Amino acid sequence: KTPIHPEALFAVDGLLTDEERDIRATVRTLCDKELRPHLADWFEDGRIPARELARRFGQLGLLGMHLKGYGCAGLGAVSYGLACLELEAADSGLRSLVSVQGSLAMYAIWKYGTEEQKNEWLPAMAAGERIGCFGLTEPDFGSDPARMRTRARRDGGDWVLDGTKMWITNGTVADVAVVWAQTDEGIRGFLVPAGTPGFSATDIKRKLSLRASVTSELVLDGVRLPASAMLPGARGLSGPLGCLNEARFGIVFGAMGAALDCLETAIAYAADREVFARPLSSFQLTQQKLADMALELGKGLLLAVHLGRLKEAGTLTPEQVSVGKLNNVREALQIARTCRTILGANGVTLEYPVIRHAANLESVLTYEGTSEIHSLVVGRALTGQNAFS
Ligand code: TGC
Ligand code: FAD
Image (cartoon, helix red, strand yellow):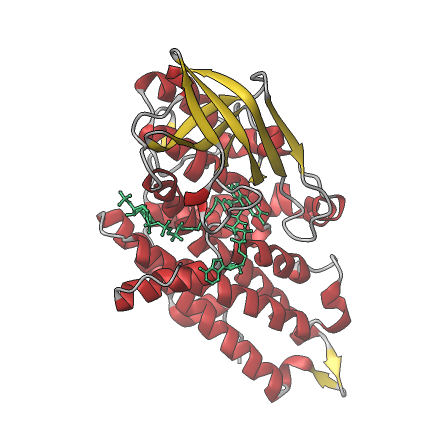
């Protein structure tokens, strides 16, 4: 019997519009032709050409693609999700670049900024000419950002910021940092242009996950900003958390991309590889692994499309985003690990993408809210009881 593609088992394609399928195909072609040939090297070297990539993604309209106006493509949530899926099927680091730019930094400006702030930053960011980062996490406060120590105090008409942000994607390559800080009126967001006196960024080295992504520490030491640097539309923790909903949504799709790339690799490998004088794919234990993985992949894709349709209808809730992020990242990591077993020793090298995806997914499990935090969000929704603290 002719094998079918795992996605075909669930007929996911039939749920998409022609435009969505076209966008997905365009991003896949970009990844195949221009990015995949370099991924193992970028991962091994722990370096990516972030600026060139941002410009290329900008040319294709992938930055802030779900936002309207200011040079953004204004496409639907499912289109954005499918772009994330294809980028993460290449490498989670590429999807991270696009997520942080479009869903965190640009979204913060688009949602909470003044017209001047939007006009100054968004068109250039959509084009990939300027890069943004999003500084919420601190060395001592990740899951519990409400306790952040970074502080902004008024000094005449200015603001002065002091503090440290940690684990910030794109930090050293960013032209602007969206920094969240405590003030006398609660948490507020500030736009800190690179090069502002007192602001510095350094790369975090020796990561064994998301190596094809820039991760940095930001230090703010008496950073003086004009009043116009504050994002007036965000007040309290709901400001940054509103941005996280956007990026978490992209990860619901993205994680399934990484899982799909692993599963396709494992299916092809098992068909070619002979053990005990038969194809590995002809053994029942292998088929059980493949069947279980295809089920989780298909269910994850259906969930992603469903959440995408809810987002397009304007009814998606943060708890539903947590359901998707928790399930799809957890299952993607399990799929990557199981595929690794099918590849045997070959599975531990960068000749195949599987161990790279598995290593990357460890970060994806942790950032944008850990799996434990999303379990607690869902638990709170189910019980009405807050178990965070
Ligand atoms: P809590 O009392 O629950 O809420 C405080 C205020 O926030 C509102 N809120 C939300 N608003 C929008 N979206 C959400 N998802 C929201 N969740 C809560 C809430 O209504 C309330 O508003 P108000 O007006 O009443 O004040 O806050 P809490 O302190 O108990 O914390 C809740 C918790 C733990 C869920 C939250 O702190 C959390 O999500 N923690 C995880 C932090 C996190 O995800 N950090 C990610 C950093 S960025 C990143 O990782 C980028 S990686 C990107 C990449 O490379 O791809
Ligand atoms: P902690 O909060 O210290 O958690 C440690 C462990 O305790 C986790 O298992 C957690 O789930 C668990 N835990 C915490 N609270 C509870 C609880 N109430 N009950 C039970 N268990 C709990 N942040 C940004 O702001 N911007 C970025 O661009 C960004 N990019 C990142 C890129 C990478 C590669 C990585 C790895 C992280 C990035 N982060 C970024 C930071 C990320 O969001 C945080 O690492 C994450 O929120 C978790 O915080 P933490 O690492 O401090 O862990």
